Length: 173
Image (cartoon, rainbow, N blue to C red; front, side, top):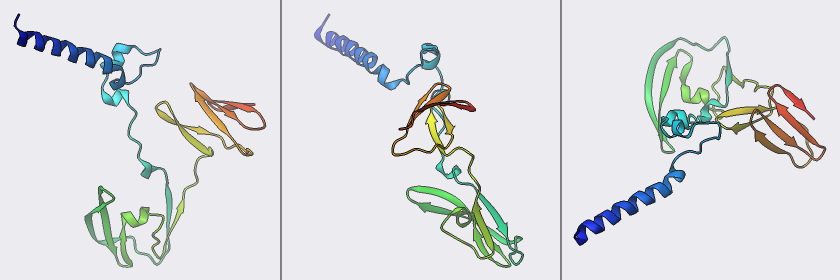
């Protein structure tokens, strides 16, 4: 065996060893209940949670006063580029003014005759990411410190007054 083949073989073995050593860092962690091979061969959509869209957090209720026309005379779609993102905005012209979907969705823009109020949030005061979904935690009164420790099917709430375990729709203190 000549020196070139030996060097190429050693390089291939070294590359294979490096790939095997870095594999645990590249692949997602498999939970003990899951089958590791199923996790290894699953698609990225199955392995990682869906992307989080913060625009969906705030919901609004709109009320239109009688003097405001809601029938569009002209409608245009424009591209808005800002903060490294490109979005499309609908601009509508009515008999009473010009309105945009971007302005209607913004908490900082108010149109005359259109009353925009935030919809009430669900009863839970705190939402946290647990595993692959958002989990609601009921509001609690606490002094200085509150620790929330999530675990499978629930969470442990620790305050200065004691501990509470929240499981699905019930809380045990």
